Structures are given as C-alpha cells and as structure tokens.
Length: 123
Image (cartoon, rainbow, N blue to C red; front, side, top):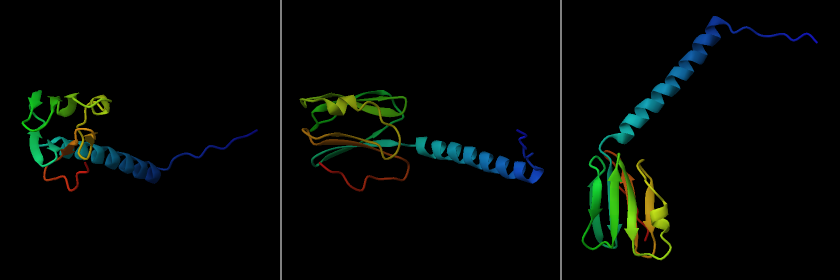
C-alpha cells in the first residue's frame, strides 16, 4: 500500500494562514465590542431599571421583589420569592442578548451592549 501525500503549496499556505488570522481577529474584535459599556435592563411589569455591569455589588430595586448580584461584568438573580427558583439557577449572564426570566414574579433581566436596547420583553 503506497500512499501519496500532497505537499501544501506556498499559495495554499498563504490562503489558509489568512483565513485563520482573519477568524481570530474577528473573534477578538467581537469580544472587545461586546464587553464595552454593557448594561442589564431589569423589568417587572411597568417598573424598569438599567444597571451598569462594570461595578460589582448586590442590588435591590423598589417595586421588584428580588436581589441581583453583579460580578466581573456579569449579572445574576440571587434571591426571588418564586417557588421553583429557576431564575436563580440560571446563573450569571453577561453577553449581549442573554436573559433571565422569572415568570411567577414577572421579572426579566436582559443584557444590552453599547448602543443596544431591548426591543421586546415578554412577561
């Protein structure tokens, strides 16, 4: 059994290298744009609050029966009065478009990046 191996030509190596470099650069650019000036939009019925994700701490808001924790640019719901605690089990969210929903308390938490806003909130 004689197998033939094809050697990569210089032109093919340049194309492969360019595609790899471009892919890695795109990932870094998207991550940097996503992490700048993100906020969490917290809603409970008509009550709406925006919370910057660049300052760590525990937060409570009037009109919302829950407690939130911001840590390392991410947010999670840590205390809610709902029976199943599914919203608490969701854990931290930090990328634009991610959300936490507490259906019994009608609470939604959505992460919005710079220049973004939440278009629709169900609940």
